[in-house]
Image (tube, rainbow, N blue to C red; front, side, top):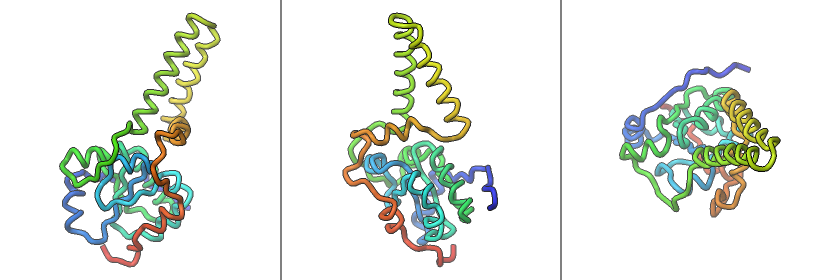
Length: 200
C-alpha cells in the first residue's frame, strides 16, 4: 500500500465558493459528527462522520470523482479523512481551510440549525476542567489526585502526536452531542453521488 502524502492540500473558502457554481462534479464531505452537521453545514454537503469514513474509506473513495473537498470544524479531522482516502486510492481531495465556520465567515452558503458547542471546544473545556479538578483535589483532598492532571497532560500529548482524540470519541456519545437522526455508515455512503465516472 502506498503511504499517503503528508502535505495538506488546502483549499481557501473563497475558492470553494467559486467552485460551487462552476463545477457540477464537486462533492463536499463534512466529516464532523451528525450533531455538528445538524448545527451548521455547507449547503449541498454530505455528512460522513470521520469514524464512518475511517472504517469504510475504500467504499467512500469508490464513489467519488476528482473534485472532493473535505470539511470539519478546523481542518484536523478533514486532514485525517484526506489521509484515509489517499490510502484508499483517492489522492486528489482538498481540505477546506478554516473548516465550515471559516466558509460561513467568508460569506459561503450554509445551513444553520440549533446552536451547540463544537467538539474541539468541548474537548478543551473537559480537559481543562479535569486538570483544574485534579490540582484542586490534590491540594485539598489527596495529593494522589494530582495524577489526574498528569494523566490528562499525557493524553493530550498522545492525542497531538497521533492526531487522534479519545476524549472527543467519549464526548461524542453524550446526549447533547447526538443528532436528531444519527447517520449510519451504510446511509452515509448511500447518500453520496457516484461521481467516479465523471471527468473533472
